[in-house]
Length: 261
Image (tube, rainbow, N blue to C red; front, top):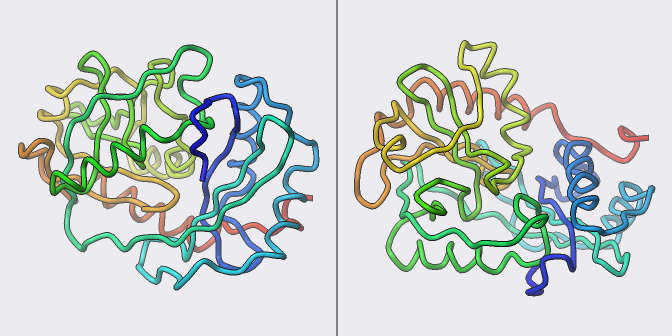
């Protein structure tokens, strides 16, 4: 995994893998790697997609595939190290409970510019936040800096405000530019839910109509509470539209190397 202590040691992304020769929305993930590599000063080979798919031919699946509706069979971490090495790391995916999730508020890790908001080589603080959430008996850690929501420990947060707009944290504040949100945004807006970025506070979260967390590995999950306090009405309009869109993507967004050439 990407856990080297040096943010500029690697650039990477993680996407669904079918256990064979297809990745979910691979084009979007390769595009994000290139965007973030420019910020981090890491040179990415022009034939990165081919190198990743070539590596897929030589690896075995890491365990039992996830068969939960709404999740990919496996997760694949793929990226480039600062020395130019292309790497992949296949992972199994946990099954999420069939209920809305709970969260705890935690302090977000801080990095200087230009590292903030990139998938970089020091992901330990996110993993530590994940472990701390589990130790506290909740499912997710939501990461705050100066009372502003920045990110989730393994997910992107998205809330439905009372004005009918779905808001996610600002990339300029340090949030990742979520590929999952990018994938479902057109369907949400077609369903009458505009998607915008904003500075999200705990008060705004507690006043929200509902909230979801989402990512390449976990899919779309409803969030019911933070720090023991209820968030709106879980599994409402936002969840249903996001979930429906994600299920369509899971059915149609798989790509092989031939699709990218």
